[in-house]
Image (cartoon, rainbow, N blue to C red; front, side, top):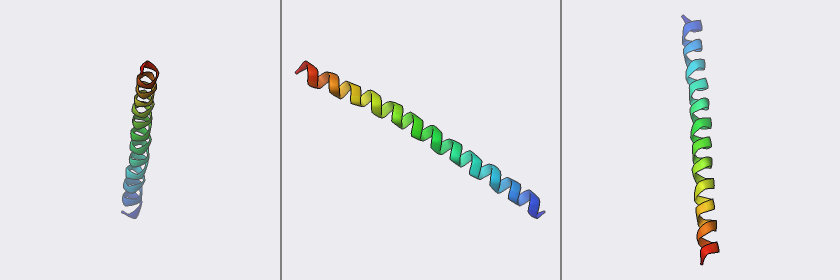
Amino acid sequence: MKGVIFHFWKQIIIFLLRLKDLIGFTTFQAGSKEGLTVIKLIRSL
């Protein structure tokens, strides 16, 4: 029984870490796009 619970928690932890990486990646992508837009706006002024 303990082994099953441990395996279950391990799966949850791996899932959360992947989710964190995915969120971090998408926010980084969005952030860089926003940064480029800001640079373009500044240059156009």
